[in-house]
Image (cartoon, rainbow, N blue to C red):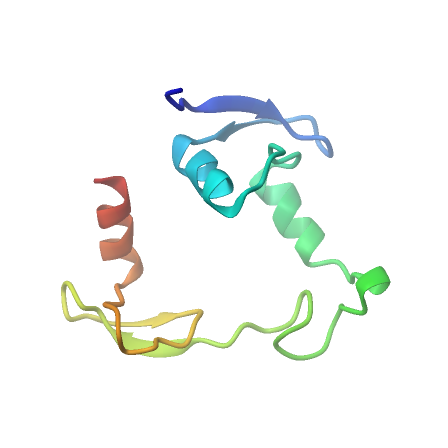
Length: 106
């Protein structure tokens, strides 16, 4: 079955948002069976709230709403200095956000 972009309605604000084919492929690769219920801005707002029922909230890096650690890299494609939100392992190429977006879209 071929995937195509879907228009969904946010359960929080009621705004319509696009569930792209790329996002659908990601959901399938992770085994997720439900569609997203919230638009990106509502998801971001929700992530910023404390998650008391899970022990998250303020605090440092592994909790909800905490600061993310960034790691400096040199893009494997264009050679630009950039930062990424994960620790590069060294066994795979790492790209700046522009090159990553270009590769993802092609």
